[in-house]
Each structure stands twice: as C-alpha cells, then as structure tokens.
Length: 281
Image (cartoon, rainbow, N blue to C red; front, side, top):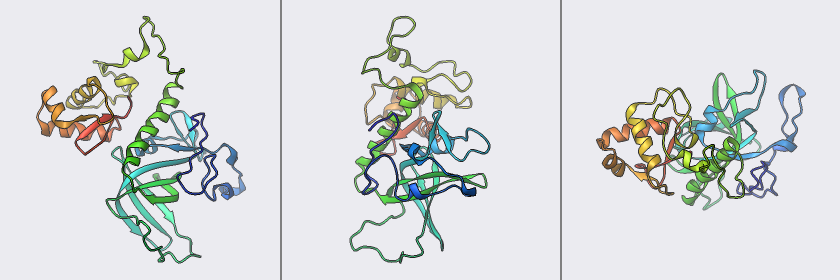
C-alpha cells in the first residue's frame, strides 16, 4: 500500500484499485459543484479519529485527520445495534476507541429482503468492516456507507488496527527514513526519546511516543498509561493483572483507568477485553 497516499485496497469487492468505491466517481455535491474524484483516497482509521476529525473551514465538506484530507475511510467495529428504517439501515459500531453510527441506504429498485443462501449476515455483537464517507448532519456525525460486510476472520480486526496506526504515524510523524532512526538533538536516536511519559503532563501535549495527553486525565490513568508505555512492547500488549501487579494498583482501579484511556483513544484492546496496547507506539 502506498502511504503517499493513494491505495490499491481491493478488500471491498471487485475494484481495480486506486482507492475508489463503487459509485463514488458518479456522486456529485449539492448545488452542482463537482468534486475532483481523482484526488480521493481510501484511508484506514479508528472511530476515535472520525470523531476527532475537523473541517478546515466553515463551508468545507471534507474532513481533516492528522492534517490531511480524508475523503473515503474504512474501519472495523463491533455492531452494538441494528435499526432498520424504510430508506436505510443504521448500524451502531464500536471499535474500542469510540462509537459511531453507520447508515446504509437501501436501493429501492432491489428486493432487500432477498439474501443469498449461506451468505454471512450482519448481526448484533458481530464484527463488520465499513467503507464510506464521514458525514455531519445537525451537529451529529455518521458514516454514509457504500459497503458494509461482516468480518469472518478476527485476525482482520488486529490487522486493521495495525494498519490504521501505521498510516496515523505516517501523517503525524512523517514517512520512515529507510528504516533508520533519526538522531536527536543530543546525538541519541529519536526512538530513545519516547521511552517514557512526560512526568509533567502539562496541557494536552507530551507523553508516550508523542501522544497528545489530555490535561484532565486522572492520576490512575496516567500511572496505567506509563506502565503500558514502559513495558516491553508486543502485539498482544499488557494484561490488566500484569499492570495491577507492576504499579501496584487494585484491579478495579486499573479497569477504570483502562476505560478512561480507551475513551480518550490512547489504548486499545488486543487478544481480549482485559489486554491493552498503546494506540500510538
């Protein structure tokens, strides 16, 4: 995948690449304005990134994520609720970093009650991958989906989170320099400067690997975040019992701290609900 950033993502169906979704080339903006669909991209994201995205100007229709325009997005989440209306089906998805609604509009020319025998169905508590565009209506955000399908292999969930992290790091910190670490101001590698959390936690900056640490983060959450950051990193992350032993802290307090960190998009669950890893590593 070219994080330049165009993509040859083909998981959505029988696309030929280039980051387009079926029908997106024919869509038009209201008022007769024409978009340059040649500049559209397909970007893997977390729901927290969608919630935190902003408009570059009051009249802009596209959103900005990590100082880069995000047109089409893809993400994976667990379906918490399915609501069927006359014109659309609304799915409420949760990926551990946030919750957002996804609307799939019905094609009135097709019989939506027909489903192919043996075809996997979208069900509550199951996982689904979404391709679509971030929308805002009446100060509430949702994703207008072109495609939503169930996730059959749960390895795809972890793959997506790793991919979204890699793209986030590309846009927020720049591309890798041929695998070489860049020297810091004191001659040490830049990586060595991110091994600990800024003990001051001043404002909204500083912290693990350049994370934006919320100023209102509780002391217990800071301790848990520091423990995860300073632990030997692996794809599986750190279990709640290990954290409670290392700090030390009551398991119930660690759970509350973990919920706070997940709500702020700083960590995510890995092999189970009680094993956490840094989102920005």
